[in-house]
Image 1: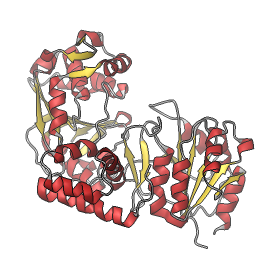
Image 2 (image 1 turned 135 degrees about the vertical axis):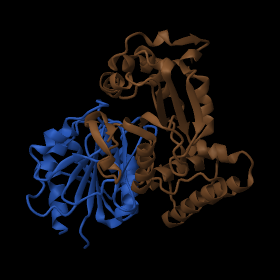
Image 3 (image 1 turned 180 degrees about the vertical axis):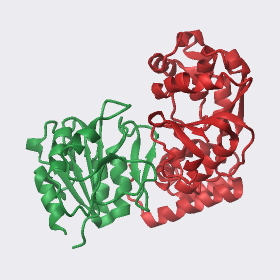
Image 4 (image 1 turned 45 degrees about the vertical axis):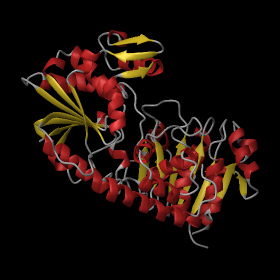
Amino acid sequence: MKPFSAIVIGGSAGSIEPLHDLLRSLPETGGRFAVVCVLHLMNRQRSLLPEIYRADCPWPVKEAESTEPVLPGTVYLAPPDYHLSIEKDRTFALSNEEAVMFSRPSIDLLFSSAAPVYKHELAGLILSGANNDGTDGLLRVLKHGGQAFAQEIATAEFKEMPRAAVAASPQIREVDIPKVVEFLNRRF
Amino acid sequence: MSEDIDDSAYDLETELLIEALYQKFHYDFRHYARSSVKRRLQHALSRFHCPTISHIQARLLHENGFLQELIDVITVPTTEMFRDPTYYAALRTEVLPVLKTYPSLKIWIAGTSTGEEVVSFCILLKEEGLLEKTVIYATDINQRVLDQASRGIYDTETIKRATLNYRESGGKGMISDYVSVAYGSARVDPNLLKNVVFSSHSLATDAVFGEMHLVSCRNVMIYFDRPLQNRATALFRDSLVRGGFLGLGSRESMRFLDTAPAFKALNESQRLYQKL
C-alpha cells in the first residue's frame, strides 16, 4: 500500500472542535503527509484559528499562501474569504471566484482540485456542518482512488454534512476522529 | 461540480485552448494557475452548452464575437468597493501623507475589473484633497469590464455593501455624497472619475507605460504562477519612482518573489510596500 501524501478536511458549523481533536492527535514524529483544511467561517477578514490550533498541534499550523508548496508534516488552513485549491505541481492557489454553494472557501473546490493531483495518496474527511458542501468533493476523491471519510454522525454537533456525505456512497465511511489519524499512520 | 470527465483529455484540451487564445488573439493565460482556469472553463462549458473544451475551441477559432464572451467567463470579475477597509485606512494614514508632498500624482490600478476599486480610490483621493492633481490609470485585459467601469453605473446592492466598508475604512463623508440613485441603479458622480484613464493592458505581455507614484494591484496575482508574479512585480518596480508605493491583495505577498529585494515592507499586514 502506498503511503498517503495528504489529507483534505472540510467542516462547517461545529467543526472547530473535532478538527482541534484531530490536530492534537497527530504523531509527534513522522508527519509524512500534509493536512489541508477548509472550514466555513463567518469572519471575512482574519481568523484566529491558526493561533488556537498551533498551541496544541505537534505540527506547524499556517494559513495557505498563493504558490506555496504543499509540504508534508504541515497543517494548512484556507484563509477566510478565498477559495483554496491545489495545483498539479503540489503548490497552493487562492482565488476570488464566486462562492460555490454559498461558500468561499468551498470544500468541494479544494477536494476536487486535490483529487486528481494526489489520486490514491489522498484521504478526504468531512466534519460537522449544517449544509452539504463537501459531498461532491469526497466523490471526486473516491473517483481518483483516494479514501473518503465522514465524522461519525452520532458525534457531530451538526449532522447534515456528514450525513449527506455518507448517503452519497457506501465507500464513504463514518469514523471516530482519532481513528482517522490511526488509519493514516498505519499506511506508513 | 463536474460529472464524468476524462481528466487527461480535459487537461490537454485546456492547454490547447490556452495556446489558441495566445497564438491567435494574444491573450496570454499560459502562466495562470490551472486550477482556476479549469474551473472557469467548466463554467464556460455550461454557459455555452458545449460538451467539450474542443467545441469551445472550434467556436473561438471560427465564430465572430465569441472571443469576448469567452474572456468574460475566464476572467474573474469579483470585486467590491473598499474591499478590505483596513487597506484603505492604511493608505489614508501611511501613504497619502507622503503623496501629498508631490506636485502631481500618477496612480496605476492594475486589474481594474468593473471599477469598484477605482471608485474607492477616487473617493479616498477626493477626501484627502488629492484628486485634482492625480491621474489614475485603470487597466485590465478585458476591454468590456473597462467600458463598464468607465460608465460608473452599479446596482444598488453594490452601494449598500460599500457603505459599511467605507465607514470602516475611515471615510469622512457618506457614500451617497458620491453616487446618485435612480431607477434601481446607482451612478457615480462623473466628476469623480474625470481624471481616470481606462486602458487595456496585460501584465503578462505588455510593458511599462509611465512613471507611477503608487501602484495598486489586488487579487490579480493570486491567479498567476510564480514566473508571472515575478514579471508583474518587475513591471511595478520599473514603473514606480524611488520611494513609490505598491499595494497588493490581502493574501498576496512579495515574500516568495525575485523582485522582493527592490521593495521594503511599509505595512506587511496590509500588503503595502515601498520601492527602495
